[in-house]
Image (cartoon, rainbow over all chains, first blue to last red; front, top):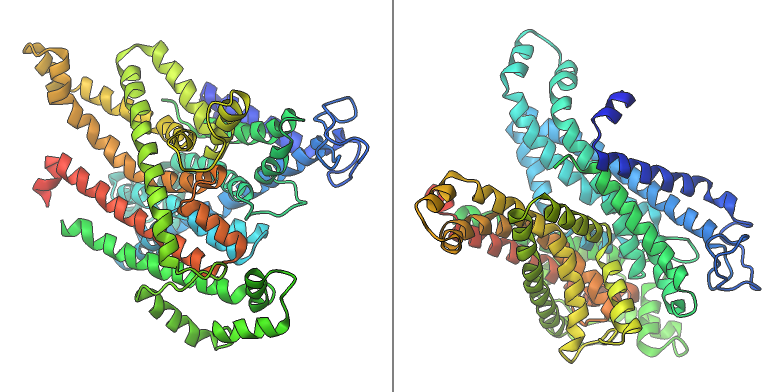
Length: 266
Length: 311
């Protein structure tokens, strides 16, 4: 399966995948490059430029930036993957259910979707973040709540046409079970869209967390989080511009990686 | 027409219910003693005592049962009674009015600029060969990879701090709007120029367009008479999708540039735990979102004779 996936991937998707793998490796093993963990303050070396001991320099408390960047990227990956898994499972199962099981379920679910679509996603997440400030779990809950709607809408639309297709109807008449019909007919039809939605959703989730950190209502210090680090390091721009550049580049690479991975050949 | 207005009206009601409920939960679930916190924000951290907190608790009815308060909360909201800011004691409506003007100004300038960037870029990509198009794709992908506040931050660093051409933040003079509007416009245009390009290619290769050329119309005339409307329709429809990004962008950009609009107000209110203002700002954003979506629907309806025949 992996081989065939690689064969069908476009050049852009391979680049995106590689970029994400590099970032993931850094997130998992980057702590090993630092002399101490991300919380250790070396007050003799504040705002140090990149050197042999501190590969990415140190911040305004003398904390190693390698360790902090690794922590922040790991946190972003964690949130992105958790949100994608949760929202895609909810969105896909409800979408298939709504398209396959008659009008009542569909109507009820559509009311929910319309309510959720009435507010911009970031506003919903902001309100949730206001209820429980600085909580990773609530952030994850809010983002998943916003994102499952997209899966639902796409999956529902594609499943509707698949259910009516002659291929699936003849399968049904031959007496195959529901699970088989899903596996054989519906899943292959929705899988490409779900994959694209998942990569873009992951990027959006990461962006949302950084946005909240950036307006100071998301994760709270001393946690290492990309948006928060931008705010913290901005005042030191004239002394240490490389410090501000690090979270900026990291978030851009993360989002770029997911966007490249998700884009079908154009 | 009914098909356009009825679902939107339902959405409007759900906005009010959703925001009302969330802010109510926020009100009840706040960590720490809320009355004490409000008293502190009113009288200053040094002058606050538990007597002052008790006074606030009585004044704001913070000790009633949950269900009772919930329905009276929603009723107040439906009557348009948003209350006063817990921090400045100004009526929320007044604050919102002030913020709305600034936000609309920023949004319209940004939207206008984004058209100015996206339409020429899209047409360029559609008419000149593959090389130009690929260049534009690289540009769009790069901008898209950056969240709107990173674009804004880079603009600040380059144009305000490095070259000192434009003010870093604030409002008042026309120069203040340039950077926030430009950063928002770039993010919007990075996506919409692709839509313009695809719509243009579809129109340019359509049989009716070829026919107009063959019968001898000049290329400018063909474009205006036969191309422009066909290209406009998907672009306007896409605007509806982009509204989400636009409103989210406004929250971020206003906070970054200290632009006194709704987004800035919302972020500040959340930080200060000023619940009436949180509720008002979120409500206004939701209403604005639904109203603008309705406008997009109406414009599409005007542009597309097929939709009118169906209705």
